[in-house]
Image (cartoon, rainbow, N blue to C red; front, side, top):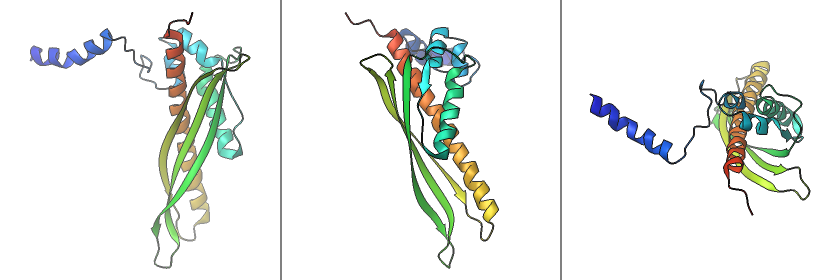
Length: 183
């Protein structure tokens, strides 16, 4: 039995030897607040990211979610980085009634992001894209239920996208802090 445990531990030892460090905090949280407990310098770098305006209602929700996750309980840090995010939605009809009315809608949401320094001239630190898919039902002649279902789905999309963007930004900032200084 102990030889099996040793065999299972080998990949973990190999990852540790190559300099791999998990992005998630020690308590299993996947947001920026969970990162601060193990890496104060990364927490400070994340808190120094300012999120630009994102148009429309879902953009406002996304911006607020990003700000909460990036600040990590440290509002008021001096800004060193700009984060620009654009949201795109693609709608697909999944189900139809016999009379042709839609009964289920799937939304594919994409957040393209760009992280740059606030220095002059601007230096692009990293860019990326996050994508997620969710769906909601359109009950027949239940307009309130359809609106509530859509709004709930939009909140889930924004929460998922913001978490993925924050993880991408954290990876970029960690990479930047551990990169050797250019001479």
